[in-house]
Figure 1 (cartoon, rainbow, N blue to C red):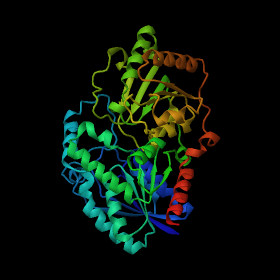
Figure 2 (figure 1 turned 135 degrees about the horizontal axis):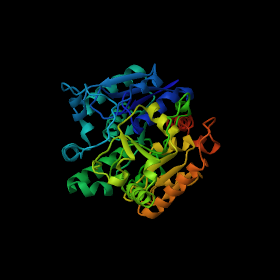
Figure 3 (figure 1 turned 90 degrees about the vertical axis):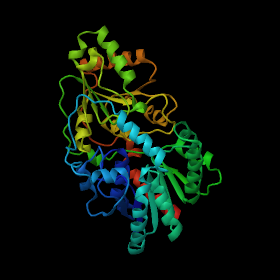
Figure 4 (figure 1 turned 45 degrees about the vertical axis):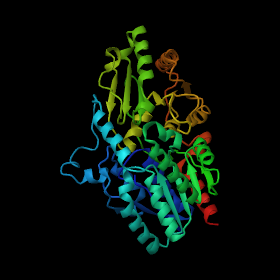
Length: 432
């Protein structure tokens, strides 16, 4: 069996979608002839931790290193690890001070604050390569510093390297919030990374197209490997029981995933139908960043609740118990955006209200599924109309779920095991 060094800053027991992607690759790669050896960071101060994920990767060789980046330093301070990992919150204060801190870190550290992990990761990575007889290097970003670590190891050991872009900030995206010097440095940096990689994978075609257009001289091979869902995650899960028409949103809220159009539509619906607030419940699962949710309109506030990050299986209980799943993408979202949650949404076979712009890659996926209703964010009246119709269908018993049995044929393409086989085949192509 061949061995691949996996460089991933975010890895269990941390949670969230980026962790799910690389963790599932590591879970299934041995079934396709590749043994992962993981290089990651030691415990960091992070808002989403899910120790239950480690059960899926028992026996995996994981090397955890020190780092001087702020998240690692913060975790070592007294009292930082004494707060509960999962807690119910109904009111979120503004995060202006945190936003200021993030902005300052972006200005000070290049290409990101995880550059302070690099010396520790490169040293450990070199030892792993020599002791484990590594055949290929695989790095996943963000953080983009992971690719720089892989680049340095590849350059020293002349090993093939595959870079995974879960997101991509082109030079044009980088300009609005950084100085001309930052932009010049970033262009030089990304060109050197792309030129060094033997293979590049990304979660969507627009990301690949952007990388290609900005790096026309690259000789790397390209492959799109989307995010997905793991059917095994749904086994033996008991859906949450709700008595009202329950709308669930799972994931973080931020300016690119703003609930404002939904809130406005819900407010209109409630004003026109005063009896509905007692029959409709909306639950948001996850954290929020750079948006203030502390002052909801009075007419909808009692129907909305917020729950901070939950363990993955627990969040699936909510999804499977929901009557309607809510998906949000703002008009300013980059074309390449395909969030991981949409695939788990689809796997539940529940009705989905997707409030998203026309230009995003996620729309090209969801329009293939009849249970998805797509409405642009600016069309608040249409959002309200769809909510009203969906509620009436639910009230009449039209779309109550009968439970999951097998993977629908049109979803098999996005099953984690199938996606990992695609990755293993790409690895094989790279080393031949």
